[in-house]
Image (cartoon, rainbow, N blue to C red; front, top):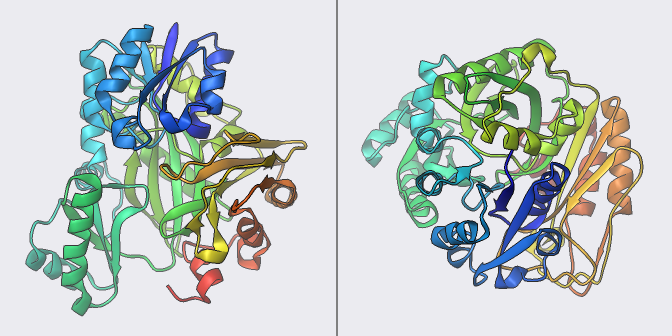
Length: 452
């Protein structure tokens, strides 16, 4: 196992990784921008290194600064968390060149799977079902429109290098396609530095279901069940749960086997997630692969009793998984709510503020992953995620009751402070959600009465 690991991230995920490292006796190095000088992970880690100003491009996305921090502190490995450099193949390659272990898949594998168009082509070869659409990027609006017209509307245009719910547009009418195509390409170039896009059929009433996989470098791989991530706003996940309510065990097993098959075929190593859409007939379609730890990984940990960060570290250190699919058992039900510094009353506008008082919920089987503390100043330069409230119950009804209680107990107070907790409480009370009959349209229906 590693002696020292540098955590190339911030916020709750940096603290969460540092805690597992401490349990395993691994020394930790935190990196921080000027805005995060007094952050929780800086206080918790064994050593910390300042790497730049608040803008991410000058700190958390600045590869030379991160590498220099690792070399200066003797870090043998870097854990990228999620976001920032976690799915950057160039960063993984630099780590390899510098003799530093990147805790994630090989750079070449990440390069292929991180390109959504290339990944679609690879999944076709692995036998995974896809929605009708292109299996490679489309370079001209004429070709793209011809494909959209042939598969039928609505369609969705997606950035080949996209992720995190960004770089996509839904088109419901042929007359709107050309403008949407051009706008998506411009956005993709601006956000990802890559203007390539692809087109696929858009499912109106679909569930967003994902499969967590783990693989070692010896071609051993397992899946750890499924998560439902259908509660979304503007393609951003708000609530996740495992197992997906109402999804047949046989379907989860089939999707899991398909994901494992593709994992091995791709030469993937580490923790990864295969994302699918599931229609009203329980037919599933591959969307993309996330080559990193997911924000929602705690719900999988709760039902499997596995520490996914510890598994990442073990695999990255060259250890075999040591267990097979028959050894993986899921029990009970887990739900996660993302608490963001956003004001639902103002259209979910960001709400950076100083936290005067923070009260985390507690009780049996309640977990809170957060970096908040009294006096913490929420910066405006980064993602608005403040905390993840996660509960477990022997069944979904108990888990729902615990989440409702936890959200009621949560307090984030201070001048201008606002969070999504109250809105998430209304999701827990929504009859469609409570019956487990929701899909990706739920939040739009709640906010706009069914209007998209």
